[in-house]
Length: 320
Image (cartoon, rainbow, N blue to C red):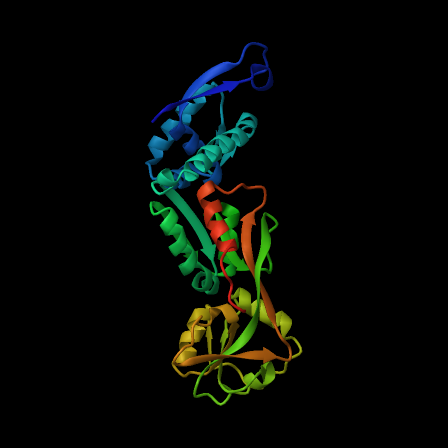
């Protein structure tokens, strides 16, 4: 690993006046530093960059010794940046990001770049967005490992907030203050049913009429269930559901098996004509869902994650 040289202005950083100090350290040391900041713990950082926890500690100690400062306050429960550490962080991020951007901009180097990108998605967005986007990403960066956390909306938000995921794909709703939402797609809810169902040939179906048939719904822990309960307060339902699930994709499987109909986001339905399933627009009311990117406020994504985000933005959305 090549040694880097960083010139520090003593008057700004070490409270005494003199010529800039040249400090030698390894790129690995900076990567370890940023990993601890991102993950909030030495254990999580070690797992993220695939080294042992003692090796990570040695890298941080080496960097602190080279700088002659303390970068982290460590207790048994948490790790936090010191004042000097907070000052040092933007410079480290800028240095590492500039290096990655430069390398990813060189075609023969880009294909050999290694690293990890983690994106958290609710299952319907994982089904709709990720196969095409991952395929395109792997053509550009075959050695960068992608991890997709397909989970509930609440867990997506938590993963982004904690730094476990670089960013998330979910729908707008009750989001933590630490994360921000950016709209990618607005979609409507549709009725999922079999082609041999009495409602399959309709141009549209009201929510009340759909619930007169055997139907499958989401349980109360689902983010989609909360959204629908708010949108459908005035709808009188005459019969209970025949089954409750936690994920939309499970509902669609039960519909295909003939257990009933289900009200689902349009992007959860098969993109191509399906031999068994059809979707029918739901009206009275027409319920919409905003789908987009979730990112932690104030955090700049690493270059590899920025590339994945770019591909998501450029994805040709089908009518939803």
